[in-house]
Length: 142
Ligand code: HEC
Image (cartoon, rainbow, N blue to C red; front, side, top):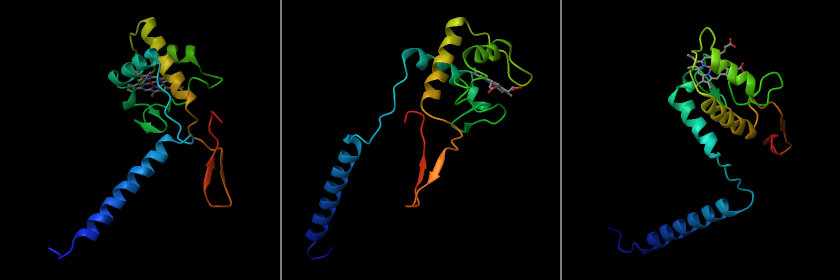
């Protein structure tokens, strides 16, 4: 034991207080954009998405299985959209099983994919390298 350990205690206390203040500032200032909450219908859709293992073949934001395509923006894609999504759920394709969802369940999955779609674009190629060296992405809600 050092004869006088107090300076260390002060240093640790100082670091803890600074860390606390830092977190307070980061999470309460306006620049912190809280994640938008899913509607109850979209939550149901998310549960169906998980319990039916859509993840094993599909990705959202590039994460997931790779047998099927990424579904991040399938809702707003001009050539796709809600009816298109439902058509896939109704009939399936060669490597995608047919799901026997009722209308309410299909609506819930569409609502989930709609809210996912609103969060951004994937893959996002609309990026610029600024003079500072940081990469600036253009987001959907800007
Ligand atoms: C066993 C793998 C598998 C599972 C599980 C699966 N899919 Fe698919 N899905 C695919 C494949 C492969 C395609 C691409 C078919 C094609 O384009 O020929 C596809 C296509 C789609 C499409 C059309 C996408 C586009 O951009 O054209 C949607 C929407 C979709 N799936 C939704 C779902 C949902 C929702 C679930 C869960 C309820 C699900 N899939 C589960 C394999 C799967």
